Length: 296
Image (cartoon, rainbow, N blue to C red; front, top):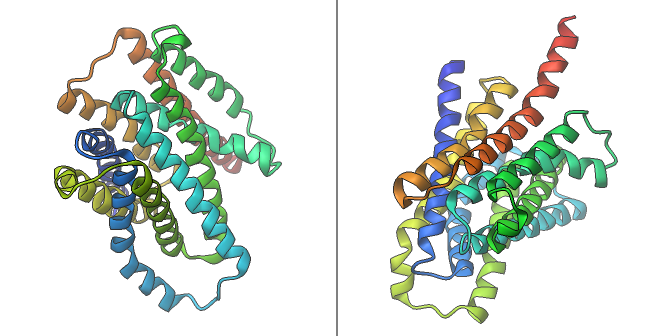
């Protein structure tokens, strides 16, 4: 696979994830947020299981109790992110959700600073301030105009960052990315369905009304797009991969406008631009400076 083809594969993955925001939003016209989360991740678990079996046949190293605990915590973080994002979509737009969720790119290194005691790259601090400025502009120049859904989506981005940190550590220790995916999907499905059974009434008609969105997010966003990301990143550079994968936010906003008729003012667009710049800066600047120092 050429680098151009790999970048196109990553762009397709980002487009699929962007479409997932629209599916998540429209599904709740027919079904409650926890039923949607539970069913989508149940589907995702089933999709990934055959690949887990193949992975296990090639990986001989047994899992330790520490590994299982790490898998469990990763699943808890995924559930937290999925729940806050889904509930947030009840009161925020697809555009806001896609860009605010993307701030996990900024939060991941901040988590490493606080919990792992890793020295931060200097770009983290200006990127964090830029992202905060972006949220301020997205609110129209007043934080008081942010909805509960916007704040929940910021919490979602924190959960996503925790999930990425935990999953990255687990993959390094076990070499089982698909096993980790299946475990976190299953934990999220069970937790969400447990809440849904207690808190959200459901009928077969409700499930049928959201079936298309459940299958799209379960099969394509969680299954296909993950595979495309893994494949594409093998044949391109880290900076280029970051650019193409970060376009998920742009696809989410564009599809929200095209399919749902969402609009925002000039300040909102400026805020989205600032957040996108912050995302790219965190991914690209350290890698580019590292390459320049190696070349020197």
